[in-house]
Length: 228
Image 1 (cartoon, rainbow, N blue to C red):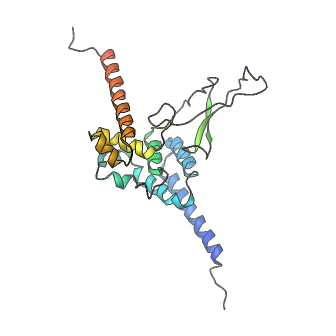
Image 2 (cartoon, helix red, strand yellow):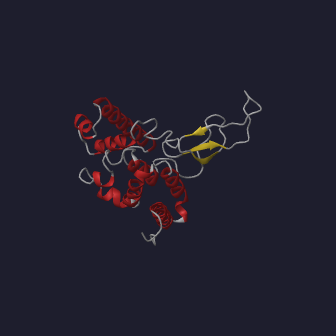
Image 3 (cartoon, rainbow, N blue to C red):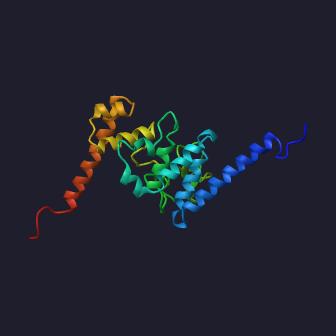
């Protein structure tokens, strides 16, 4: 039997994987400018948490959600499934995570969050064990009072003080929030999101609380009535 001029099956698979990785890396670098360095950094950290069989879902989400203005202009109950893959395809809420990074729901810009333990500065640090693939680790030179020989190693998760802090399902929370903006009744929202009534009630209550806080702040800082 003559030798295969294209190499063994193992070599072909290795070359195919390398070509796929290079193509995706080039696409990511070309899409985001230097002004979006934080977005590129965070998306790459997120990509490393995605298993190989879900990489196509990740890159599809990046392609569909990269133009934020277009997403918000075309997003509706009918088009939701086009921007956000169903749960049997996107088993890890990858689309919702990409959306949170691109639109800035998770922390993006400088300064980074303060360390919750010592109040010092933190730095971006990749960590594949976290939800988004990174955390903000304390970089202060302060030593702990309780243990003078140790430096502070406090950290902040990117979802801290956000809508999705301690959320069990990012995709479900995002969908319920959108359903609330569409004025869908809570019982119907629970069925659409395939979740419990209590979960839908909790998210709807948080939406109302945020609106109440915003309106209260507007009333305090902006006097009612005309001049005089």
